[in-house]
Length: 577
Image (tube, rainbow, N blue to C red; front, side, top):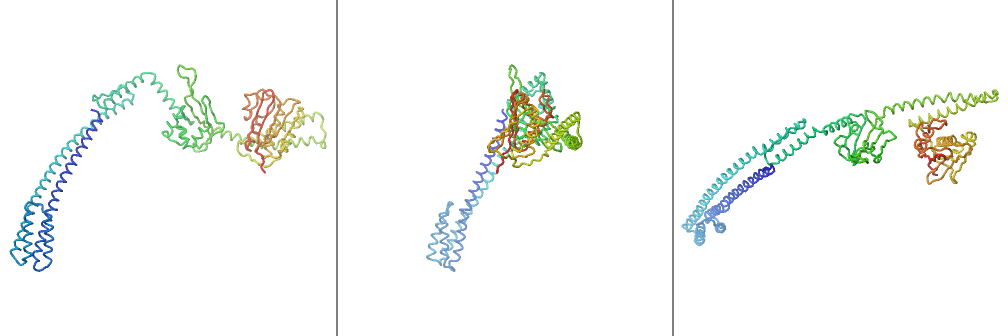
């Protein structure tokens, strides 16, 4: 028999017995109620009326209202006739009462009425005794029937209590022991239930599972599972946070380091859609903020600042797409991504130390360089004394080197300001012409030496720009200096200033060798110099220029066709009166 059928039968039988016991008890209680009501309602009222009539008889000679009282109770008695002989006794009382009303002083009539009332009371007393015996008999029958039924219910419930739990618990206990054997990798364990209940089906399914597990353990799949566990253990023990998601953005795994930095529990993230997790977690939302496409790897250029290990730490995010080639196919298939956070805090700390060192050294260099340049000015002064040609050439070389060293020192100082975040901006309305004149004059001698013409064109109606004068001039000066450095002799450089809705565009265009396509995206990287160029420079100018422009709310870009020159473009906010 099925377990469900057993449970339904047992519970149903108990329910049926409860109903039978309840109906039987209710029926007997109702019978007792009827018997007691007959006594109370009919016989008791007759006795009460008879008593009142006797009292009225005693007051006939002393109370004028006694006849009225007697007649009222007599009328009530006529309506309450219920027992055999009670009607005749009531009629005798009524007949004698009529005669008494005519002959009130007749003692024989009074005696007859008392006898009639006594007979009426005797009839009802006998009826009460009879009904009491009937009620007592009903009560005994009720007690017997309810006791027998209750005993039967108790016996059946006891039998169910003894047998039903054991029928369910014993197979579960046997199955639990077998499951523990399977957990201990004893795949030869089997369960044998001969019954045709659900436990029999469960035993059959369990044995099939154990048989398949035994086959798997003896096959290569066991090695694969062990390898998977090794990888999971390796990921869990990595110091860098790692999160794995499938192609549907469901989280497959997350290591302890990732749980620590996100502040989440494993059960709240594994198996969930990473977008749903991101709704309640700012860090996860930041990790998936940038959309990624299959067959690409995305790495954030800016380090993420996260509070970890009791301090502010820096992490570099990398999203690696996982692609596999299915068996028998040639094209790879995207199956998920791995989000990694590399802890670069030690490198950041070293970089900060480097920045502080460069800032200190560069600042200390400016004083001796200024002394050298002052000495050179004194040597060039003819009032101090004249120099021969060899001395003049030596002084010129020293001056060029000191200028170059001063420029490098200035670039290093600017770079340290940008890295440390201590750059100060003083944006205000600035004359565009003064910015361009400063850059052109600073590079006029270098342009004249290479016979390069600098053509400046400012769109009509433009006069001011909202920017930091010193840093905008520095940027334009650097772009113009680079254009001269990489232009051919006897060529032209164009400086255009264009008007936009709310922006002012600056364009510096040369006609030199240009930049190869593979280097376009790297020219703004720090210390980068295009391979094969023999020109001097530190590789910092364009990087600093880009950061200066962005700090002022603008953007610096480059366009170039290799062999025909380059065009550097940046914009600033237009000054609003």
